[in-house]
Image 1: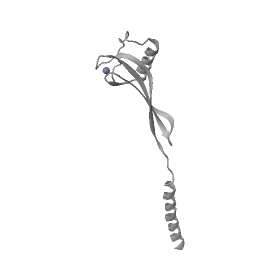
Image 2 (image 1 turned 60 degrees about the horizontal axis):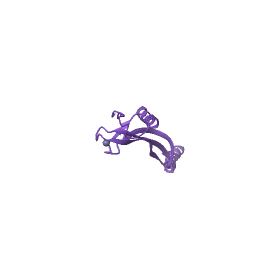
Image 3 (image 1 turned 180 degrees about the horizontal axis):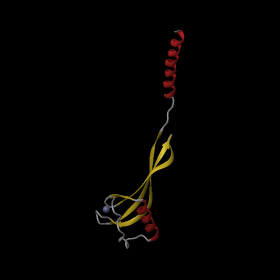
Image 4 (image 1 turned 90 degrees about the vertical axis):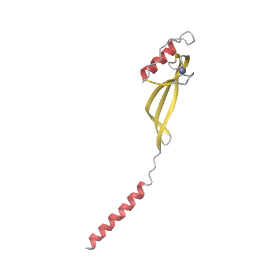
Length: 120
Ligand SMILES: [Zn+2]
């Protein structure tokens, strides 16, 4: 009889130690998004109809641990009309194509005939 009572007391004591141990672990993690401008193209805006500058943005969201960015989780491409503010999402292929256009073709008011990418 004595032994059984002693073992049940031991189990209760262990439970108390376990809960206090888990409270000590603190992990700070989160997400951070950085936006890069890959290129600026002169496109005909479908809303305002002006041959306005359209910067191609790449937004990279990274997982952070203790405020240190570790690895990218999501990459989003988008463009925005600087005249009226119309924003649209882009696929990776569309964004790279637009960047190649901007690097290859000379910029200026003479060539605003480029097609606006279709909206998703
Ligand atoms: Zn516009």
